[in-house]
Length: 609
Ligand SMILES: Nc1ncnc2c1ncn2[C@@H]1O[C@H](COP(=O)(O)OP(=O)(O)OP(=O)(O)O)[C@@H](O)[C@H]1O
Image (cartoon, rainbow, N blue to C red; front, top):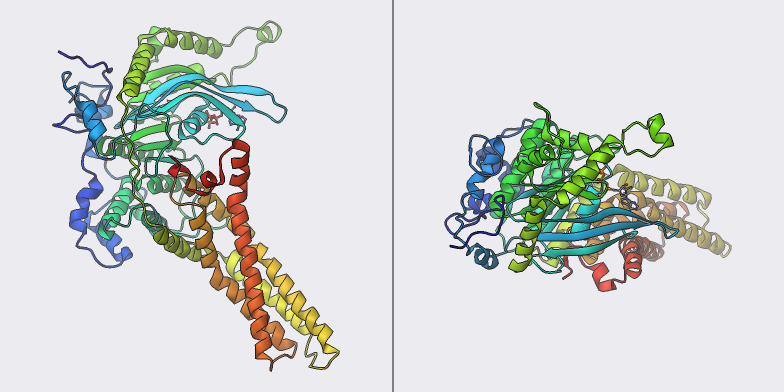
């Protein structure tokens, strides 16, 4: 009888109960296909039909994480919601690997072994951030990366996602489904610590545009809407649908809602591998439980692999985690089932006091940032209590069964292999059209960029018009006319740079979306250029006409036509060049530094294969 080589906390797909259940979105699509009206009405109808709770009040937890569903697997309580899936696997059922291989759009198993990351400063000095960390994450599960601030959690996440900063060097094996390979579109998404969102859009618009860009054209509109509606509900954003996102100038949705919206935008495609950097920061404890439980529910039903950096989870949230990677000072304190971490601490002399949240206990034990330096330690080196705990636990982990099991599991995963299918996304044309529309909406709602600039253009042309007021048609007017044309053309063209601050904000969004593979540089430049064109024509024709009229050249319409044509061309050229430079040059330079080609630089980042 074949016994499973995998530890008890492994996910357990089986032919009778596959790990990947049908997507709730897909399930909803049948009923929603009747909806044929425009997006807004459809989405409202969809949400009404589901009678979701509104506002900040968190909706009820999905059945997959039902606290009542006690089971014999990992942990109890809320965690037991997953046990139905976890313990369902029969030990003899060794065909599950074959199931995974064959499964359409198969899950992503990621392993990392002996990963070192060092920072190199300008003077060539190096400092180790990660020191030989290893681990794995698998479909259907949530792996939490925890540790004190500055211990290297984000660096580990960035390393796994292939997004390390250029001054960081990494070594070690990172394998996806047992192979060194890059992630295809739709395979992975990364929700960063910062919420980079378009301030002028409403929540509904942000999700709507994102769904159109990311989901394939072959997907019926009703299904896209169902997916968007489900995702909105999952993240409890129904009540904020028509609220502007807001930014530094204008207050919009709350910090917690921004975080949930960021997650929402990345889970629309149900990526196989989801990296979350502090998904619950800025979110209240009830909402953070619901957010994490929805994410864990998605992992279970969609076969997603979730790797999340989490700060201070409450005990209920902690129980949702399948695996725990606990780091301190770049070293592994513990990697294994989250439910066994407390036992590991107890067996090594650091028992969790009764009534204390285990995650609080772990972090308190290994946090050395606030250890007070005593007179004694100042004169003779003496490790602090936290230093001692870290050393004890790091050594204990290295020689533990948990570490052995983790290595065995990594080995099994790497042996298994498996295909990684690229997901379809919207066509180039759809992306350009949707991005053009989004960019146009963003522009005209931006008072500083759009209306204030137009006001400044008109003021400049009024000034120039009065300086060269009615200079007539005589020979001596030729010089004045040339000056007037040169000043107007030059100032208006150079004023195109006035849009740069707003453009910088848009660039941040572009970088986030491009890194997540939503679209590439070409779609971005074309759509921005197209969306800016009506405005560029406006700012060439209106102020140009004012200056021209005041200077007394009323009768020469042909001159005016040439003049505005030249102005339009110049402003469009300047703005277009500005976009190309901003979008390509930083990456191109980075490409030159890192040795990547222009092809790699100009395509959506995770489309590289
Ligand atoms: N690009 C970099 N260059 C130099 N040092 C870096 C770089 N990125 C991170 N570090 C350093 O590496 C250490 C770990 O940083 P990291 O952001 O991974 O920590 P973290 O555990 O995610 O912290 P937090 O929980 O506060 O976000 C920090 O001391 C940080 O200063």
